[in-house]
Length: 222
Image (cartoon, rainbow, N blue to C red; front, side, top):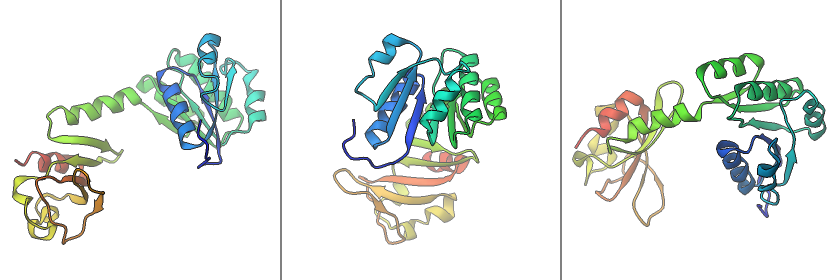
């Protein structure tokens, strides 16, 4: 568990499957006090001493509402992946308890729609998001890829041949391709924010932002 607390908010994580456990452990590393809730007693036991507190309980039951109110979490994450019904009921208890920030994993588009309608603040679809990300990485042109809801992306990509040996101002990447080089990174060197005078070498990796379609066109350059 983290020795130095970087964050003051306690976080309630419901469900310790692959998704929930990864979230709980990473939040603990970041310094949050994580209260993990798991209805499978054997699974819950394996996380004792790995997070701040582990509770064996079924958060889909109405009795869980009082426990949530007593804990007064500022943030709650529903990571239940075995049952849409259990996920929705647990999320509904969090909404009824007026938890300020509720996150929940959705298994299907329909599940996502229900969670949104009952008042969950942030609904994520990790499988769908991961699938879209892989689709952009398989051709080998992009080395990493993060897409936002409005079709805007940030990627890590090798510099096109035409830019090597020139500054960003000279290569005019933004004017030619409609994307912005945010920064550059070479092996063994610190990340550097890009300025017009930044000179691109063959060893650099570029951090580039812009519309997804334009990013793909830029990455396709030899």
